[in-house]
Amino acid sequence: MTPDRAAVRGEHWWPVALAILVAASLHVLLPEKYRVAPSWVVPCVLLVLLTALFIGDPGRIDRQKPWLRVLTGTMIAFMTVANLFAAARLVDDILTNNKLFADNAIGLLATGGVVWATIVITFGLWFWDLDRGGAAARAHQPFANPALVFPEMQNTNYAPAAWVPIFADYLVLAFWTATAFSPTDISAVKRWAKLLMMTEAVASLGIGGLVIARAINILQ
Image (cartoon, rainbow, N blue to C red; front, side):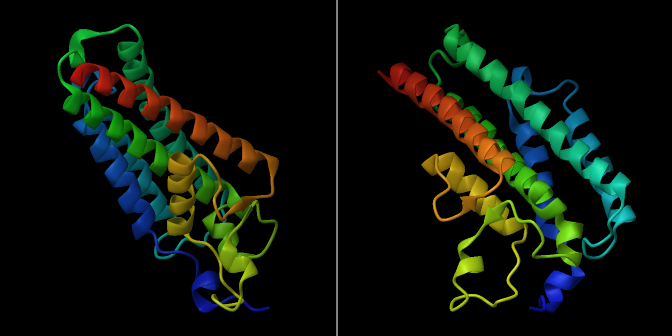
């Protein structure tokens, strides 16, 4: 079985870069209390790390270098920690009945929505970076040691035999895990992938449940 040309050459950077820029912008949109201070730190750090990745692996993502893997993981981890900070502050305010959103259900829902959307993006990036050794590894050995089995891999009547997942597919997985609290049509076959999906489902359920319950209470 020979992978198609796109799989051999690697993925385009722009979908990943767009997701990271969206996550950085969402963090800036949060109320000041929920942002990492000063407010420029998160977008600037993410932009610097993303630029370094572009320089180290220009064009399509296909260079297998340890420092690139470390840098990619560092970028996603930094984004995760920044959103964890915001989520922790939000949960604390809800549980302690903080007055910040005492009469502002729309503001609460908007803040919760930003945190939730960033959860989806960060987990999508984690799935994308960890499955089969990352995007560069998939460009060279696209079928080696998968942790996630997509329906296209099993239904060759509806997809090319050489089909390989790209970032958009992992983002869809993260979205459905956060909304349906289940893998839907994508199966995790490695323990780390199962645990990561479980972690995302718990985080999404916790944030969504608390925010919606508190908003309903405010409206009443």
